[in-house]
Amino acid sequence: MEREQVARLLEKYWQVETTVEEEKMLAEYFRGVDVPPEWETYRDIFSFYEQEREVKPGEELEERIMERVRSRPRLRGAWWGAAACIVLGLGLSLYQGEGGKPVAYQGDKPRAYQADQPIAKNVYKDTYDDPQQALAAVQKALLVASRNMNKGLQPLK
Amino acid sequence: MKDKLYRLALRLLLDGHDAEDVVQEVMIRLWSRREEWGQWQNLEAYCMTAVKNSCLDRLRKRQLRPVGEERARDVNSHDKDPHEKMIAKETFMQIRKCMDELPQHQQLVIQLREMEGFSYNEIAEVLGISLDQVKVNLFRARNAIKKSIIQTESSWKENR
Image 1 (cartoon, rainbow over the protein chains, first blue to last red):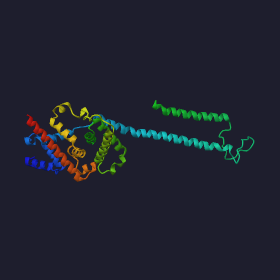
Image 2: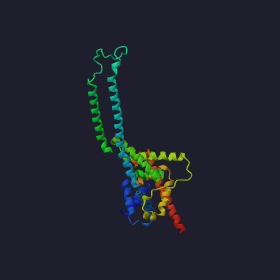
Image 3: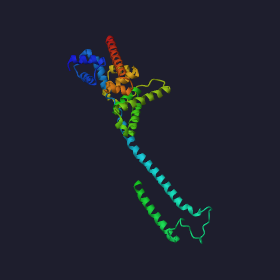
Image 4: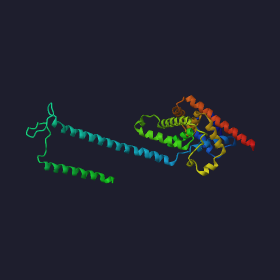
């Protein structure tokens, strides 16, 4: 860049009339070696800004931020999972509770169960007539459930 | 971008660790609102504003608790390599001192313009001031630094 051009830009610079581009040209000029002594001071100022531009945060900052950013959604997913389990569990137990209730409270008064009376239609109906058979079925169901649960927990161990 | 945010925070807080904290805070907040990024005109200016506000909050809190002595500029040691530190001129120290003593808006305008190359409009947006105020602040700051350096350099010459 010509000396006159630099002088003109400098004048504009001190009047706050330079564009960002023109200021970049000035910075580039003062990075050079052949700066006349009367502009030494300006070179100092421009190289000070240059040096300040090199100031950076520690390397670990980015890692720290990325770690926080990455761990968040996963954590949130786990919480949603836990919440869903609780809701599902509550729903199931309520549903089963509803089904089991009406036996004793038919009609206005609670009445005791009597073996010789015919049982109302909407009353809980047993799947099995033989208690032994029922017990075996329940045991089998629980066994399947526990086996699957163990299978599911395996990778976590 | 995080380097620019860090430098702005450092200019205001003069403390490397606090500056990193602020940058981390702002970046994480930014990430949590990533669905909104498209609506923002200028992400960088938005972040710079967030950093500025967060720093001003911290400065206010600092003022509330009594601090015995002025905080020394605590920049992380990895900012400059030892060789660069050795040749850091006395003039640089003088410029830094002069900058530290400028009114806050002038410091910020210098930081955003000279170090980060922001346009007047962007500076006005980040600082929440008018274009004219940006120019007035920049004019005063540039000339204050120039005057201070010319004065110290001429006094050195006289002493020799």
